[in-house]
Image (cartoon, rainbow, N blue to C red; front, side, top):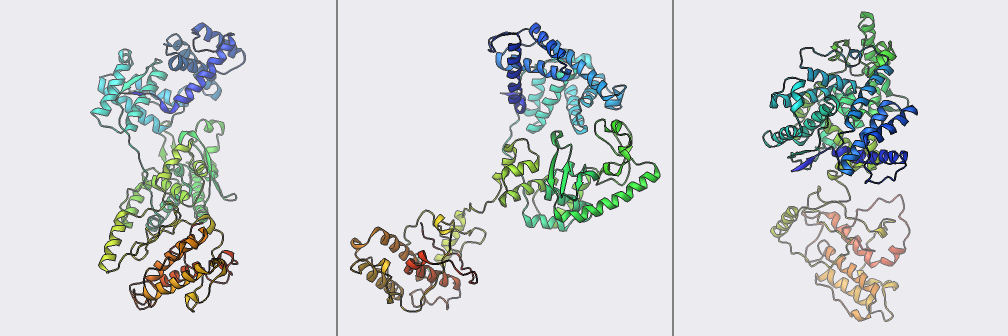
Length: 615
């Protein structure tokens, strides 16, 4: 059993509840402690002081709601004496809203409602529209309320007098147990019933104990850049422009369809997104690839609008009361939808005819056919372009806060989901299966694994001859290597022909033994003699470890070794010979390489060595 509460708003409600309680206590000259049991008379006196200051009714309603929440969350006491105050303030706030909008009746605000519906549904719709809920929210909430009424056999508003928290709890539990619904479906039913009790029935539903529908971690589907190009290749016309907007700007499909002519700023290369999720607005950059297609689309849209003006049917839906504030705005070109429908549509609320945007099911049908034609087996929807937009930006090194602003997320934790699916270049893992296949291939070819010296933690060795390129990533580079990659050369004369003074001890033992062992190992393929380590310093020991590693690599490729001639073997990559030789030359000439000058810009870049020395 888990408590089904408004988790997304609980912290914010508790914050404001503490603020209003502190102000109430200071007004009555009390210490703001949770032990103080304030009454309805204290609240009424506090509200009257705000009324004298000119505080609007909606804000006074927030004060009462905060004090009720403080009773529930902090004092854990009933708030029945404050509920009538909240109900009265709701009526006053509704009247003030209607008076401020300059309308004559409630029908002018909420539109026409079917008189054949039950009275509870009519009141429910009026309240939803009066509070500015979207049409999609209204449809979803009404559907959940109808399911609740059908399950309990409720027909009118009077039947809800006996309905309480136990009935709501049983209904939500049945949805999770018998209906096996998704967590979002159960939460939507809870919020629909919560809205009914608080705003229509004007009653407190209380805390609901219900079995929650389990919700696992969901990872979004992301297309690769190649898959995005394949889908684009199967689209054309307006659906192609919409798909590029979704991927290039990270829009939702509803945001793209609601774009108006005035929202496209070609000069500043910006797109304004209004009435997004949560009623928020934001700016996104306009991709250069879409400037000309959008210009052509706007030009064709002007032709259609001029035809509507000539026919006397030019009209577009406007949010809130803009149609009353700007009576001629519905016929102006800048307010028209960019992706307009080819026929007039009837507003489901006011039943007025408008040139609305494309239906939300039009683009998904084109996208479904394009995905099938491209041969992509992933579940690709319009929202997949938004996921791909965020993921590809993360792969390119964009800041997570920047992506949050572009996507319009209120909390960065919502954006952090894309960090779980991004394939970072600095994190590569070779599957044990690939290593197993690699070992089998080496065994079948008859090669004998050499004993490799212990490497530094910053050294990663991958045999590119048997591990696929998709898992063979460049090894991480030590901090001391990032500055300058020295020029690597290999002398044609014998390796031990000269000795660098920096590697020689006072009696010349290290240099002589090291060079002689190198020649012996190259010619005979035997393990080089270690020499007298008592005469070596700590620096020469590190040099000796690097020399041994280079010897191992060179033994697989150097002509004259027991492994055979590198150039004569077709199963070996000749570039490995050059890299092994260069690695050995780097060890033998370490003094000049560490002190050496920066490589000339005219010389080509050498491939990254397979063995990297630690700092």
